[in-house]
Length: 278
Image (cartoon, rainbow, N blue to C red; front, side):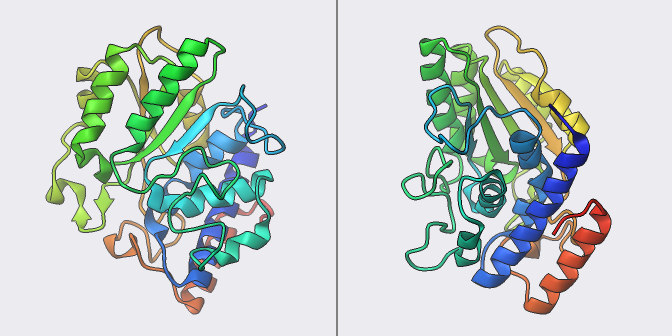
């Protein structure tokens, strides 16, 4: 059952874990991990994604593809909170031989469906998963989280054509639309124009929401599916959301905070949440 207060508290906890992981590693990507925390929390803890941490290979599970693989810390945090992995693994992020590397590794980490990181490829993989599951006919869904800068990759639009042509109505893409990428604002690096209208033109159902409003996200993620049409949710977010000195700043795309910055960041997150997170 969906409980918005639980989802918000878990999202805050994800943000704290992200900061702690990246500080311990001394490297990583806080901006896009923080901007997608509410999306990932709604999927995992909002009664959206059908999954079982006690049986990660359950054939009846839904699939989640983190196409923007550099945001792996937000998924690692979710997997730890859900019980797939031991929280003791989190401080080992990006360490030699550790389970949790800079991008998701499906061979090492329970709950990771596919290794990602080369931007633009995740939606194609999600299309293949969705088509196979449709052929099986057992009702599983595929959710794929994309970055807005990632939409500059041509392969994304090939996959968008494919999904519409083959009527992949069990596929939902979510765009973390934070308007920034490693080199600056997306509209200055390579203007994406109207993302919603682009997907509509490719034959997708489109919903635009505030990507930090868990109620709106839950409603969009659980809408009745339109037969033979894939769905995309364009989630308007703030890069670095929850940490004042990181918000809407491109320099926090791929820089880890110092120990002092981490203390400030975690204090801000806990203060803003006020729902008993650790």
